[in-house]
Amino acid sequence: MSQQIIAYGATVERSLDGTTYTEIPEAKGVAVPIVETDFLDATSLDSPNGFREYVKGLKDAGVISVPCGYTADGYEQQLADQASSTPAYYRTTMKAAPGQATGDVFEFRGFPTPQLEAGDVGDLVGMTISIRTTGDVTWTKGTAAA
Image (cartoon, rainbow, N blue to C red; front, side, top):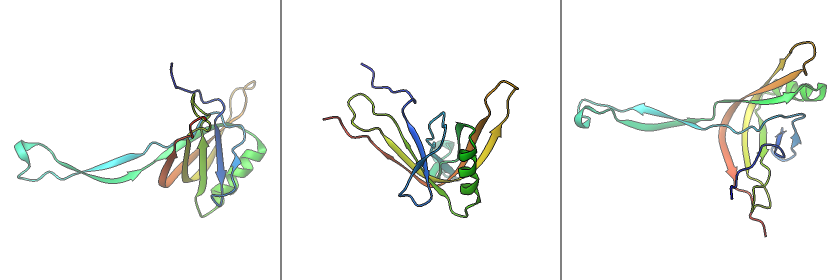
């Protein structure tokens, strides 16, 4: 039987102190950064058989987007976070997979930029929170069901 889960039931939260978290209102997707590693070309005149050689460099979690429905409270929250000179804390908690009591948790920090998405006359107004990550990304596996 598959152990996959759907995004519904996950939570995306933010915090200014890393202790007290509040949900991002009307989030429509999960926020999980993709960590990429730079590889630096270390090829030299004596590299074996003319092949390029690389060494691992720094890591970067890049910029991620969290799709949301627009609400005045959500927009106000993100504008305040954007105005801060320190990065906000973010936590994404997946719903528990089969055999888990709690879901996996991803934590990271970043600088948000809220962007409104105006649609056609009958469409819902959306908002995307573009988050420039900074620092480490942690993953904690959910606990096993008893």
